[in-house]
Image (cartoon, rainbow, N blue to C red; front, side, top):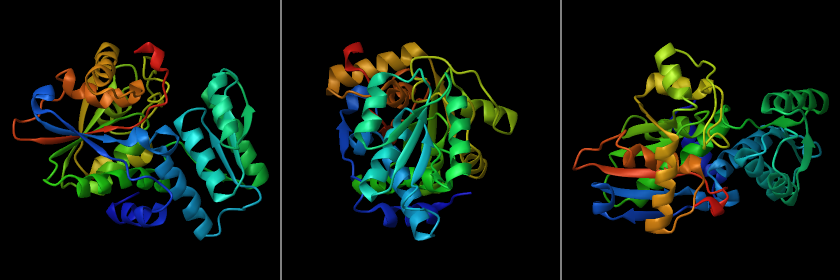
Length: 311
């Protein structure tokens, strides 16, 4: 569904709209291996999602699939909602974001600050998603999925192209957190088998592991500290397609592992990230993934929309 040329095209399209996020070199003694952090939490709106949001909206505009008066619709009170609301605002089109009635007031306020019209619908994400689909059918708005659209996933993959250019020596392994799999799909497609990709997910939301075992995406129960950002109920079709063609290693970590990794990021490097981003580092600090001594590992810290008082 997406391949390396799609990511190349996305990078050309979003250039000038997104930030080139920096790297932080990690002391070898900290993880026992040469490593860098890709600081994607410094992206617009605090997560990598802005890359896909810009690619989706700009691509639709190029193909005349976007009515500039009607704009976009998204169902997400989290990182995807904020990224798409921000991108729409910067590109001068309206955004309507459907969120559950249980969405935290602070997230609703942020969405409104980005200029979005926020619609509260139901008590679960599934209800908000259904309401968003009705709005798309009624209004002709462009729907922007949180992770399972080609432009969204290809946009996310642009961070891997940046990464390869930023590291002076070759990267052997890229480690990413997995929820619905948009980031995993984009990064894997961008690297096209030239670099090992490790997908790390919580025990409470094993979308990738379950899909690989079942041979197809399947619904999984969702719980745990990272559920606000890694809480998809199944792996996206795009991610499954990419991981069926290109090798990806799956590892699973516990909530305790994630909390510990998040604390280490703050205590050692003064980096504040959400639990979903810390999940990637937990893959190494927990021992779930053990690199070879001569590996160079890049760990993507994908978002920072969190409450720092919990550190």
